Length: 165
Length: 292
Image 1 (cartoon, rainbow over the protein chains, first blue to last red):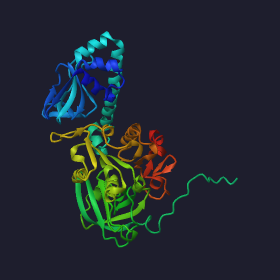
Image 2: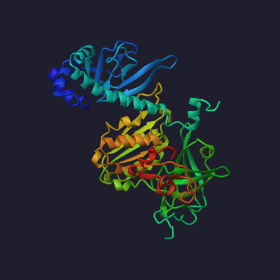
Image 3: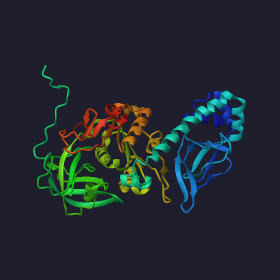
Image 4: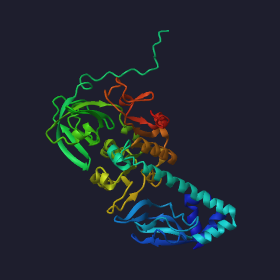
């Protein structure tokens, strides 16, 4: 399985910054998993002990809002990584995640990957180099959505309130 | 030395009678696309204006209220080189567009035009077509899709990526489904989902990376809010589409439509005359200038 996972990782641009040996080490902590459409991966507040590289399908990040149910805040597709709350304490999920389609992914044991990062700073730096652009990109897209670009002027005024009140 | 500025572009002479005076068109049908957006079919002109090309716009008059620039959203009927039927999709955001939005079938609307540059869809022959729309920006791009589908064998793959505020704000939902069945790769994403939405949530740029087109042999057509177009064009360029083959449609305060009044000046461009459709390499730097 590890050899298969290593080959699959090498096909994913997300881990292109890792060397072959670093991908091989990471593959030792990876396992193929599948999720049925509608299957929940984790809940907000749960222990962040895994992360996933999505190969096929799609995942929705959500948050339970009182009176409004589970609100989807973002969807993730093939080639993207799910989960970075495992990187830093308190290792708790900030959102929930549910498969919106039948999904195949590689799941990684986060605690084991953290131990590798601690033991091998070069490996840890490579992992952060892989994750940081994704975190940055998602922060930027979130900022763009905050602009509410498709809103009419009246919708914007309604959202921010009277400017000179 | 006379001081004459020969470097300035010559002003465009309006086509006789069609640029300055509105022609009467009757609202033949009115389709409510979303809660604040309608598509008006205009027909029965006594003196039709010249035919429109995809991407061009008309100045539409709500008599007694005012005039606004609105791009064509359909191919219309261009018999004899004249616009005998026009389609315009518009959103009620101000006094004029609210009046046009409310115009019932049978009422009269003024039309001046056609104005501006076109998408020049034919120049994409032999290449993949990538259409990226944000919000109401899908309306000016609809004729691109219709033109390409009407002559399907001339083009490679056709990809349509659509971003909307909410699922309820999606334009032409029936057509999106039909185009998907016709072999167009259609992907839709919304900023905010409701409980009935099972599609993608996020920004439209995230649809670019997984989309199936050959970047080195594609032409991109982009329309939406300025910021959306900027990020989209940058993402398309990062994917490998040459910037000169990325076209955007600018929206500014067009008034006269022929480059006389200067209301729509955008740096060295007069958008009503030099636009609204321009290649991104002409405006990429301008779109980052504050207060321009």
